[in-house]
Image (cartoon, rainbow, N blue to C red; front, side, top):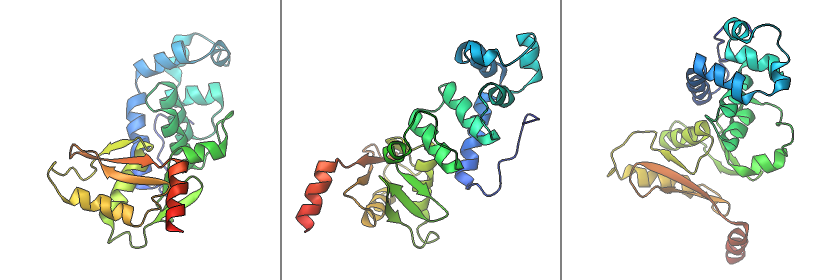
Length: 221
């Protein structure tokens, strides 16, 4: 944990490494460090340090402070936990990032419930997982560059309901609708579905309610 910066392991997907670096850029400043110490830590957390608080904050960076106070084992997990504690990411985003890092479940959470909350794009396996199932497989990622880019962007953002078009295309670009069609063509749409956002600037994903999913399966039977 020594030192202000630590390299993200090269085996991490590019999108994950970039997202972690974005969070580092937000949390590595004196304002964030003071907020964590004064308003987000408990007395028990602060009790794990000895000496003058100002000296402690000068001596340690924000990741080291979190590691000492909470015992989070790895540098990258600490980044996620600090960002969550400071309100920069929500619970779902935190869970998605921890899953990508292979971290143990957060105490008090149920792994199956967290896994079902949002999809997970496994870039190495080229699989999209949701509700414990593989709902989409990208067999030829080079030919499906647009699809992979969209899935990667959702994963990096923690699967919010909407993301901006990662390609940065103009609002009237029809290729966006074609991308959605291609995403849904190979998707288990009894569980989830993609759509354009209606403003011509981004993409949506939405859950399919279990009752609707059951009816859809019955119609196909």
